[in-house]
Image (cartoon, rainbow, N blue to C red; front, side, top):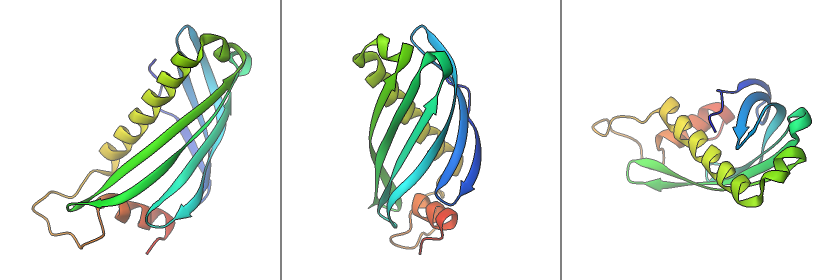
Length: 143
């Protein structure tokens, strides 16, 4: 499974639409859907949920609870992701779907970290302000 990078449009500070092409086992489909942030506990974490429709391939719903904590001079991001599917995707079996959702979540957060990057270790950082918290503060106006 190798998803193409999604095309996203920001609707508000907590919601966006997205389009992505995914292949899960033998099923490949273009999904259109919505992603939303909720349960925002700045700067400690949030919940991200989404749902998409892949036409005849079916639908996907899922989300992750994201927790942020100080780790040295940076921010540690932990998440717990879950997914639910229907249609042809549901015929693939729970293990494949669970493995795919974990892999996609891991790839998302890995790319996220690569995009935002960290401040070099030699640069001074204020306490309680890792690179991820600074980024989320900038995006969502957190203080």
